[in-house]
Amino acid sequence: MTDSPSWQAPGEPVGAGPVGAAPSQPTWQQQPPVAPAAGWAPPPKPGLFPLRPLDFGTIFGTTFRVLRRNPRPIFGVGVGLTTLVTFITGAIVTVVALLGVDRITRAAPEDAEAIAIGTGALIVVSALLTAALSVVVSAILQGVVAIEVASASLGERLTFRQIWARGRGRWGALIGWSLLLSAALTAAIVILIAIVVVMVAIGDTAGLVAGVAVGILGGLGMAVLAAWLWIKLIFVSHAIVLERLALRVAISRAWALVKGRFWRSFGILLLMTVVVQTAASIVTAPFSLAAGLAGALVNPTGDVATDTTFLIGLNLVAIALGAVVGAIGAVLLAAAATLLYVDSRMRDEGLDIDLQRTVEARALGTPTPDPYLPSTS
Image 1: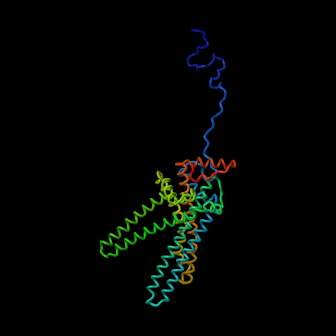
Image 2: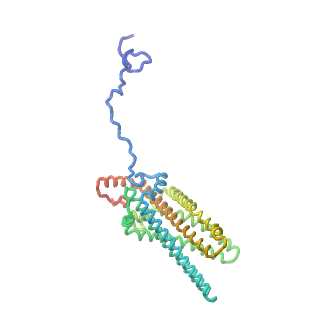
Image 3: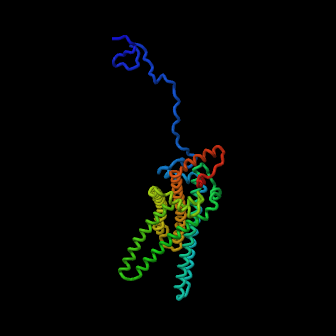
């Protein structure tokens, strides 16, 4: 055995001192302390949502925060316009129908048929005009929501006047696009109905069966095609308003942004539609039930004037409530579509980096261009 100080007893840890001596400090503890490395920091959230690609939970939750964050230009305008259009369209169709019925009852028997045909044509024209008015309001609401969500991503809180000013020069293109879509859908439905009517009018059993089959299969095919085009063209309005593109360029731009994420966009928007429709049904169901049952309770004698007054009042309340619920649903769907648009640009183009740089530059007082406009480099 040697007396070399390097010898250690078996089982004794390496670097331990002699028995009874204070244990020596391990080598790693004798090194000077090292400053910890900078940790990962989450992306900033200056406004409505964090500036990073958005997952499903973020999109779903942020959709409902759109109304709460800046309700005056969003909820106020949406409810005001939707309610106004609902009452105007209902009043126009009702007045035209009542005037037509009154003319028919007072007309001579030989003129009644011609007046009935003219009244029906007036009702159809008034319905088309009111539908066009509804499309215009829906287009404006989509543009307002798109600008609000885009500005809220940077922490801005705009008034309706400021939102309208940012969309100046693009409202006409947006309304034109919405009317074009509605006209194409209406034309397709009219053509399908005309084909079915012609086939049924042949009169024999084969024509009737063929007409019914064409109607069912054509309706299903049209529904599938409409859903497919709905998603493929869902970002056209955003490209028109936020990127200020011409209509033809906006269509190709929207088509490219949806590529590779069709089913994700379809699933999220379908879920939002189901949620909105379910909530609307729950809210309006009591009034529909009351309209059918409460008449006998309120008016057990069957007085016509009382019954009519009650039904008119109940229907007015139901229309107003339906307009409010419809406006909320339209805002939610438009907000979800805008969030999907922003998420697509974040994933494809790094829009989140541009938004972060814009927020940092504006915090320092540096003027910056609109990060949503297409890059000129």
